[in-house]
Image 1 (cartoon, one colour):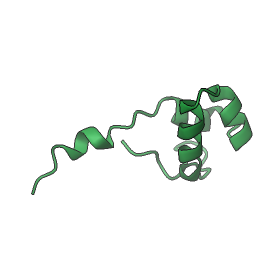
Image 2 (image 1 turned 60 degrees about the horizontal axis):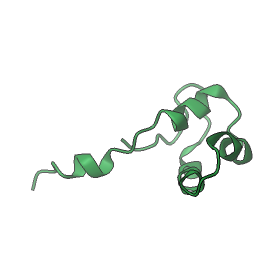
Image 3 (image 1 turned 90 degrees about the vertical axis):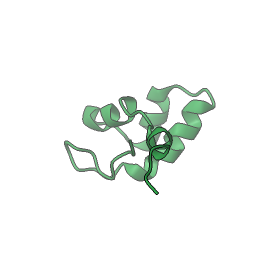
Length: 65
């Protein structure tokens, strides 16, 4: 739903990098290049970004009240 604050495996803070990653990949840069430049070198951190699906807008439709 929302990108985690820290990597689930190694504990590195990654949430502050999500906005840059999303913006740059939307502009057509390769995910590998962006992650390299952002300092995401561990495979566990890269997996957090590659496997993330942003569903917050979908879930917000079902909010009570």
